Image 1 (cartoon, rainbow, N blue to C red):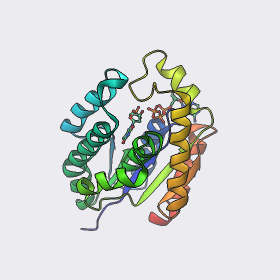
Image 2: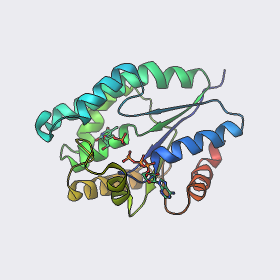
Image 3: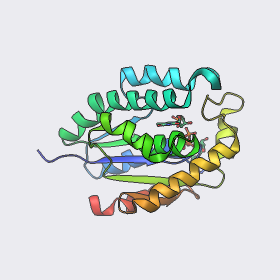
Length: 206
Ligand SMILES: Nc1ncnc2c1ncn2[C@@H]1O[C@H](COP(=O)(O)OP(=O)(O)OP(=O)(O)O)[C@@H](O)[C@H]1O
Ligand SMILES: Cc1cn([C@H]2C[C@H](O)[C@@H](COP(=O)(O)O)O2)c(=O)[nH]c1=O
């Protein structure tokens, strides 16, 4: 059986990843592909439990290195239980966030360093990097997230604007270093227009 593909959607808060994950999955299914949608942190039972530990509670709940290790632990379980079996079974896996979020949030914005966080994750991922990463960019993502969440933003989404600006700069640096894997996607316009751009960025894999 032919291997499936591993596609990740990345970007800052509110840029439209969740909306597009569902739309892209539908578009790929219409092309006859079997598609699994998932998310990080989470996706497997254990990783969803770690998600709650990471996103609930106050800023001081975790030190920066502990936070990075918890994301990596959740990711390891997610890869073991969901991502790898599905891809080996010939399915396409679409994940709302993956390791690039750790590189950008904990590594770049959080000050641990992108390479240090990459090394922490390498042990658990064991080479299961995405075939393609679609980095969604929208100048009003933060405002949209605020309108959506109100005062109920989570432990990481609620960090200051300067942190989220550093997240976006880190994502852009990761994309510049790996242009074949990571494609920049203009996430402005209607949902349908954005989905069309995502499909175009997957054209060589279809
Ligand atoms: N193309 C679009 N035009 C207008 N509004 C949109 C569009 N795409 C998404 N939205 C809205 O913007 C908000 C954020 O979208 P969404 O939840 O998909 O983003 P996200 O990147 O998954 O956010 P987060 O990472 O913070 O969970 C939602 O209220 C959603 O309905
Ligand atoms: C995978 C991952 C996520 N984060 C952050 C990014 C967001 O603020 C939350 C997840 O919330 P979402 O609504 O599901 O996007 O977690 C992170 O800091 N590091 C990571 O590796």
